Every structure is written in C-alpha cells, then in structure tokens.
Image (tube, rainbow, N blue to C red; front, top):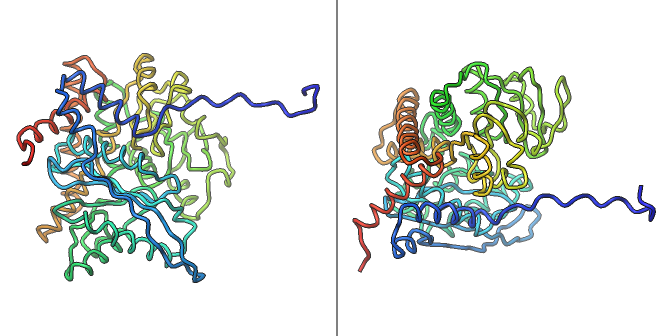
Length: 430
C-alpha cells in the first residue's frame, strides 16, 4: 500500500505497433525492396484503386433514425474482379478496411485465383440491433455500395459480424435494383439462394490442410499435438473441430471475454454446446482454468491458431510466445516487429494470406457455380480446396527454402510477383 493511500498505478501495457494499414504497407514495402520493384510499380500497388465511404440513415424499431458509416475499398482489379468480405464491428474504420483489402489482393494472388482484393465494413455492433434493424441497415448499405459491386466488378462475402443471412439480403437488394436475380453478386450465401456446399467450414478446413502440410514439413505428428485457438467464431471453431477429428488435442480456446485452458484437452462438442447456448467462456465453469486472451497466446503448445483480430502478436508479447508453429486464422494477427522476434526464436509461422485462404477459395467456387448455374457436391468442393491449399503451401515453402526467407516473405514474394506481372501486361490506360 502506498503512503498516500492511493491505489498503485499499474504498469503501462506494452505499446502496440501502428494501425493495420501501416502493418500492411510495411509488409509490402519490405518485399517490394527485396524484389527490387521499380518506383512506378510500387506506387501503383501500394495504393487502393478505389475507396468509398457512405453515411446512411436507418429507421430504428423505436421510430428514431440513426446514421451509420460504412466503407468499401477495392485495392486491386488487375487479376480480375475485386473480392473480399464485409465486416460489421464497432471498431471498423477506413484504415482497417484498406489494410484488409490489400491483404485480400495478396491472398487471392498467392493461391492463384483470378481476383483482386477488396473489403467492406460498417461501424456498428450487430448484436445491439434487432433482426429488423440489421436487415434495414444491410439493405441500405447494399444500396449505397451497389454502384461499385457486381459479379464482374466486386464480389463481397461474409466476415466478422456478418453471415449467410446478411449475404442473402445483399443479393436480394442488388437483384431488386437490377430487376433480375443476380446470385453471383456475393458469396457465402445460403444454399437455397445460390450458395455452395462446404462454404461455412471452408476457412477452417483450409486451416486443417495447412496444419497438415506444416506438420509434414516440420516433421511433427498432428495426432496428439496440443492446439490453442484464439477466437471461437466460425473460423476458429471449425478449425478446432477438424483438427480434433484428426487426433490433435485441443487444450485452450477463447472468445471475446477470455479463454479456458485444460492440459488434458477439451471435447469439441461440449465447447460447441456452450457456444450454441449463447454463453461466453468466462461465464462457464468446469474442470478447467480461466485465462485471458493474452495468456492463451503464451501457452506452451505445439500449434497456436490466432483466429480473432489483427495485431494480437506484437513486440510487447512476441518474445513470450513459443509454440512450435503458428498458423494464422485471422487477418493480420502478427505485426512485422513480432514476426522478426518469432523468427529469431525459431517459431514456424504460416502467414494469414496462405493459411486462411480456404474461405476465398470456396467463395471462388461458389461464384463459378453461380455464373454457370451448375452446382457441385460437397466432396468435390473439399477435394478442389485441398488441391489448391496443398499446391499453394508447397509453392510458398519451396520459395522460402530457395530464397532463405520466412514463409510470410515467400508468400508475399509470390503474390506480389503475380500481381506485378498482371499489371505489367495490362499496362496503363490510356
């Protein structure tokens, strides 16, 4: 106790690095320097092609009107239509959306899809809205960004805070404005309105294939390997289920409130029941230990899957994070400063633009099926997904070995080379 009677002042939290967009730019700049891209090409690739910010009114259930702010950023259309999710979250801002759009460009390129990158978002807490308010917000936002989206221009998909139902509302709104049904305007839709089988678990299944390949190259058995998953949303929960089915031991999981830890492992079905009941992990008790999200990252495990928000691994905690491998389920969970520390400590990191590309790959499959009006069975979707994920991992791994660089550097080198090639062939108009 202090002599003045005042409460002790806690030590300041470690300073986090700059915004997600600053991280995205730093990652690009480092690789552009290594590839010796000329200044003109760097200038083109560094900037988003198009940024749209909209402020739109929504009638609330109590009769009042609120104005919401939304964004849609198209980073590139050099390789094809822009592609990227729509996020509903209170912390959405233009810088974050620009970063996510840039990462989508590299993600599509590294797995060699004929897409550029885009991202969208609305600054809102969707859980604070009624279903009617959420639908009215979605339809108004869809109308506002309708001037730049379309199956030939920009194809949105679900992201944090959005789901198949939201995509169906966007598809319907766009179709009503066009005067005919346009299922290919978005992906991640319900199967009844043009969605594809296998889309819900696609990102999690892609993470499974990535972990399998990483275990093979690192000569580590997946069966019995301990796994910690930060974030138990669609991506994290499906990855956890699929990994557990392959014999991995799920020892820690978390949601926005914190995490739970059991060195003996969790039964995935029991965790899913908690989720389905609408409870948070900090509200339940049992034969496990409650931990914070930060503590989960520092557990001694074989595989760490950060599947929550960006900038979770930073210079303030990276030296305490020592799993055998990190496979990034979230977008941008690791800052450049943390990357250097993790590499120095011998942690094998599979970057987000490769590891979590399963979602956009199966979104591509959905888009193709919509354009053809011919739909595939789920086993065909999963087989094609595995083929692309495995091939892409092998290409990045081979480049990392030949160039003596990290997996992230190799993934960016491969993606940026492909983007640069497309821009060079297309030239500058007029």
